[in-house]
Amino acid sequence: MRAQLFRAAGRRLRMANYWLIAQAAKAAIFILRLLPMDAALNFADRTARRLGPLFGRHRVALDNLRSAFPDKSEAEIRAIALDMWGNMARLGAEYIYLDRLFDYDPARPDTGRIVARGTDIYERLAGEKKAHIFFTAHLGNFELIPVGAETFGLHTTALFRPPNNPYIAEYIFSTRSTAMGKLLASRRGAAIELARILESGGNIGALVDQKFQYGLRTTFFGRPCETSPLLPKLARQFDCDVYPARSTRLPGNRFLLEIEEKLTLPRDAEGKVDVLTTAQLMNDVVERWVREAPGQWMWFHKRWKLSPPRKGRRAGKATQA
Image 1: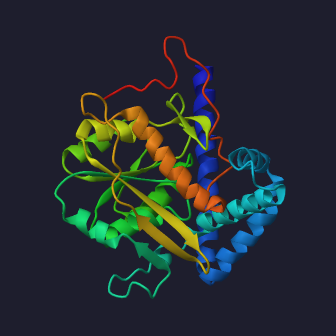
Image 2: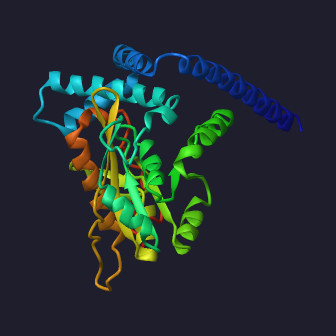
């Protein structure tokens, strides 16, 4: 009984702490929104380049960069790491101005901050009466991709990982969902919900470049890693087209949003989508993107950390849906 009381008190204290942090964050957001957007974003970039190297994750980023780009000099590696911190700070600050950043006007496509490529693909897919899968990576401001899809009438449910703080998660969800279409938190039951959307002819999107514990054993930059089987399994189950889409940051707080043509998915002897090789194909696409803009990817993520073996299961064995 006493243990239960202590646990309950601990939960109340934790929730109170979450609430205080959320109120402070909302106050900071309110103040920042009063500032000129470009000045605030540039300030965030400069500050992160100074503070980022002070954190332990900076060493992780440097080690990952050295392994990924063995031919680059140490000066080049450190410059990319600083670009990464600047990009991440801009991304965080851009949440505040998301409604102002996306100013793409299909009637005047070259006049705003957003440069779009593949608009004909968006328009074509919006007119198709079937399900589609989209994937992207933590590049540039990836939050703008579902906003772009909505602009062209391509309604998509985007899978996202909510923050641990429930009050901040609720605030971000309400802010993002106003322009991004539907959002689905990556929690228990999310895979079933995504399957239902595809079954009804809807569209889904997800990030695919993070470590997935006990995921499929694939490679990224030539090194073993673990990749989520979710999208490949759904592509196999519903035999639907899979499209890559990315965001690339441009000078002057501008962005290039690009959707590429559908992937030619590898298939097994039965003609069904092969889950493992499809996951690897997605990794290869993301690797190409990262090589083109290395300073815009989150190198501090422990992408190559492998899960310890589990009894009765071979890590990385693809399970076909």
